Image (tube, rainbow, N blue to C red):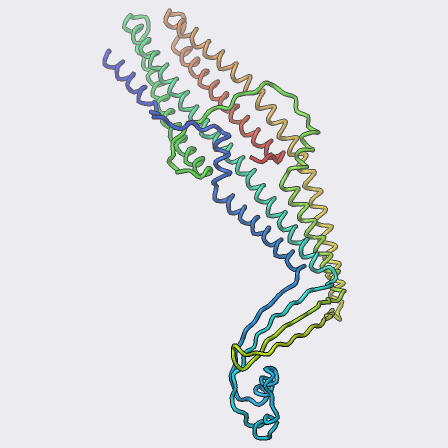
Length: 440
């Protein structure tokens, strides 16, 4: 009998997973690491930086455009030789000879030029292009922020799964330890002749079930840890311990203030505003097609038959360009742009209403989870006290083995419910933060 008791004690001790100076990972730290190192979020941020650079590119079109060129050619084509000599200020009276005009000697020609062009008026095309680029920047930035909020919610859910698996393993290990004590107690009573061997067998079966449950929970915990490590950009097999966030005192949340906060901060609404700005710029671009484009130009060139000996010249001027479709394509484009703007505004308004519903739902779910957690904590304490009383009664021969098993199951069920309520609170808080647009 002593050997069997030692075996039971050793099997229960083997269930515990050793922890050698593992890093404590609070939920806030896990979220911060994910936001800082997640590769998917970094890709979204790169898209936002690209859109910001496109704004600078669109703004540059308000400034003059300068082009510099340098070229060299050699040939004996009559027109080429004639124009080269004339541009280099090397045309002489002998070049008017018929033979020299028809069969000139080949010449090499160096041509350099600096040209400047400034658009003076384009009907608003450049301004509309800049507005469109800003709209795209707002959409890309909001998309990155939205992905950050979604990532924080994913981390909270993964953290909750680790917490659930660890709690299930701890509860099963505690239940196995208690079952081993119950087996020893039943063996003593059997040896004393007050109970039969059926009690011992029933408790041994219960102990084996708790051992199996602890092993299964340990596997779930390993998978949940790997997923959380992936989200936070750490090694998949990195070891850490999780902590239950403290339950704050009950608070009354002002739904109106929270709805106003969400409307001001939600990335989806900012993306909707960017879509409206983009549609407005599209309408302005369509309207600008009715107007001509006017530009001023200036050029300075230096030409010669050798690289070091050249003659300079300059030219200034202006240009007006006006093109439109005879099939009234511009009018159709304006109608399409107006419809697109109406669609963007309607989508923005619908998103605002959906955000308000989401905030209300998140507040109610969080309040429910907090209340359930408080009840679950009290239930665990009551179940543990009930188990203590029943085990004492069993020792005194006033309770049966089924009472002991029922008390053990009640403790395990109460602890499972408490952990589920804690995880629900974590997930509900993350959902509320996401609904409010609170950036992690």
